[in-house]
Amino acid sequence: MMFFSGKPDSDKEPASMGQRILSFCFAVFVSVVLLSLALQLLAQIWGWLLLIAILAAAVFAGFWFYRKRRDGW
Image 1: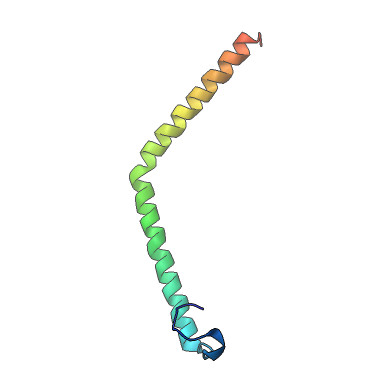
Image 2: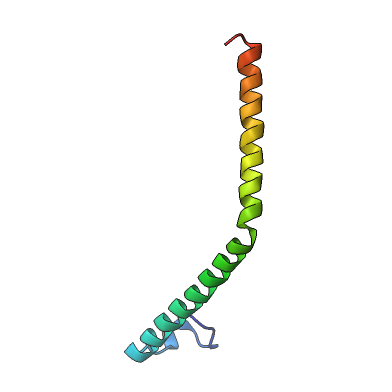
């Protein structure tokens, strides 16, 4: 059931080929719009994400180096 029409499923007519194609095109359109919005958001914050990843890697590497040095290699 794609949209609520108030009818039970057994009383509904099967969707015509035109309705199926229109529903598919609408789903593709919505998917493209959402993907473009996600990419715009990612383009705005990718620098911060990269900085956070570098800082996390540096903390991990520092902790690993400290443990290796303390344990005597």
